[in-house]
Length: 306
Image (tube, rainbow, N blue to C red; front, side, top):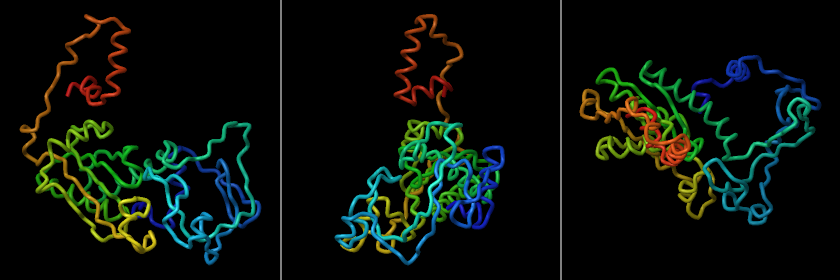
């Protein structure tokens, strides 16, 4: 998907250096004619044998079947399946010097490190995509952890004209068309905290007209075999990308129609005029705040007053 924003052949190492604020260091590989990122945890050198295809597990090989037997955890929050794929023949394994950073952490799938790597780039790409379509309308993008790395995006917009009611639907359709298998794209207003799932659910509950605001942009398009509900559409055939059928995902316009903002005014609570210390000691206040963290909408209201 990111190739929509950063074309194939673009300077990805340059982009990585820009993000971290200094150039990405490279080092010559030991056994192949290539370069590697010098500060990588590990570097696997070798070559890809495109025609040497093998199954990823013995069970799949014995059954000569793809997409049925478990392999390892995947980003969708389910066990991934074993497939028959090209083999990578390793000629060397190198690692960075442990003296600078003694702890080496192998990346785990559907864990916070994997989520951070995936979603940081995807959020930026979705933002750039929308801003290219209609500059200034998009305000922020979030991919919440429980909604998985590649299956959702939440877009926040600030409408300026009546025509923006339509542009945000162009955003939804474009996001779902360019990111294969994107199952859910939600668009909300700038008064909704897109980092609070409680605020998102509240917007879905109170601002969505099921007859008008639900979109199904790309039925029959390219999907994702990592999503079980898509895998099973293959039926008795192998659960591979060639046999599944993407239902098209769902886009949701959870914004207030332009011009009706006063009819959707959020209540305002005078938090600046109330001092809890008047009635409670420091320990009681700390305990109350800790309890609110498990009820995030209450925490948002206490923090913003609306």
